[in-house]
Length: 588
Ligand code: HEM
Ligand SMILES: *[C@@H]1O[C@H](CO)[C@@H](O)[C@H](O)[C@H]1NC(C)=O
Ligand SMILES: *[C@@H]1O[C@H](CO)[C@@H](O)[C@H](O)[C@H]1NC(C)=O
Image (tube, rainbow, N blue to C red; front, side):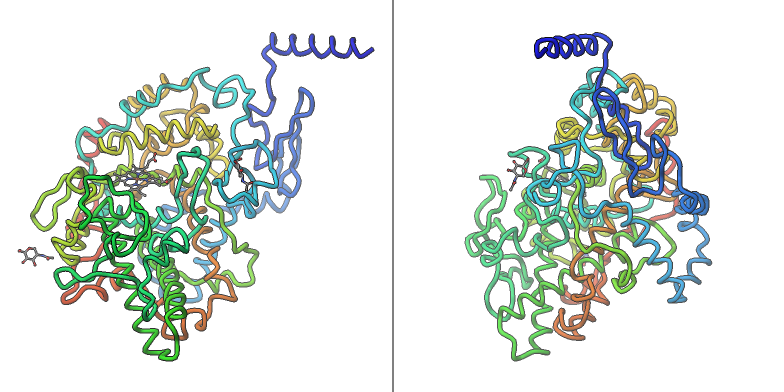
């Protein structure tokens, strides 16, 4: 009897493998976030708790049908928000309407992020570790099952194209292409410095591992742990250690603040500055932001001490840190995301709009968010600091360039310097290895195809490569590499997508990045009802610092004398000034 069973199983498997049977979930048959479950050799879709039913969760409920009918598509919304300036000026000036719009932005974006988190890169299904294991990034979509006919599921070729070929054909910069919305390198460095506080891959362990705190924790200013923080603190009046050079405040040297920094051996010890993040000494732009936050922290300490002469060092330090965190979120939303969105609607940081809503004050960093944020094309090859030219190589490992020119001149120059266009043929040679590795990591992690991510974020799956690139030549090359639009991989799709009208990026990067970003910012504990009150920030004085923070103030309150140009858009920008150049470079 036993023997017969084994024979049946053996021949069953043999037949299955001859017929090419595979895990039926490899074709992602379940729609609308339905979960694909194998049962023997067949499958079914779990549509529970969705507003959809049917074999493949394809049919919306009556209420959902109405909601879907009323919901404008993302590109229509984008076009509305980036045009009709008079309409938005009116809405901006009427608090009731402005708040209503902002609440919609918060909820529509953050609703798309599953909270608590659902998957990790280890399993294709939910596990207890999905929530409790903080050493790994979360996953928005589970990995492609291992027993599929192709690496991408059922589509495309059996072998993925070599990453080096992809990078050489589509990514490598021949000539610098400027960013068409006039974005400055002050913005590029903001993106890099801000996101490095929570994108911390522990690459020695593997691309799914991370050593960060899963959110906006200001660890780029205060260090990755208590030990670093203590080494950066002066333990006097709440302040961080600093040194004065050329009459300006700068971070201390590592000999005076023993924190691990990633300096190569050739950097002299008197140029090894200590900061909260181990990379921040590597690039002058990161050093600039690290320094300005240090100055701001110490300035806030003075303000709080004047208000609370009774407070000790510890209380001044801890409360100033909360103020810095609050200011960070305020500036990220109202300056940084504002520029990035290019909306005429003026974005607001107002946590009270979410009080009483269904909203989880917890966040987890997703590996897809990390990949999506590899914005290396934003970096030019050359920097002009008030007439002195440096190429990127001269910049690397030379934070003292900022000290030499002084904060005013450096910020002013970064504000006038054009960032790079985010798209094909614009990765500088120094960051080519970074993206080549990124593509490899995406494969090790078995990231699902680009089109699956489009669907997850309510975008229609693309039907062709031409629809992706908006032209024919690169589309044809991509087709040759991948064979099928459904086999296109995540990061390559993001880079190759045509730019959206009046936008810095393509549709997908904003529609996918927006939800992660809004969730990550608004789910911060300081936005929750128990934290968001004056007492948390040292009283009205501190609360007002948070509520009135701007990028301009961050720099100008911390630079002696006249205020330099502080801007995410270069002052000599004229709308559409480089569009013809881009067309020509991409041979459109
Ligand atoms: C010239 C400037 C830049 C250089 C030289 C540079 C270099 C690097 C290097 C060497 C890595 C580590 C790669 C690895 O471990 O495989 C990295 C990671 C990364 N970079 Fe850049 N980068 C630059 C600018 C930027 C900018 C402007 C952004 C925009 C947001 C950015 C976003 C990232 C992200 C998100 C990571 C992943 C970090 C992690 O997961 O730990 N980088 N970059
Ligand atoms: C977290 O997950 C990783 C990857 O599976 C594993 O190596 C590690 O031991 C887990 N950590 C804990 C605390 O369970
Ligand atoms: C740029 O250099 C000139 C000449 O040295 C100087 O007068 C000017 O103040 C500098 N600009 C800034 C913003 O520091």
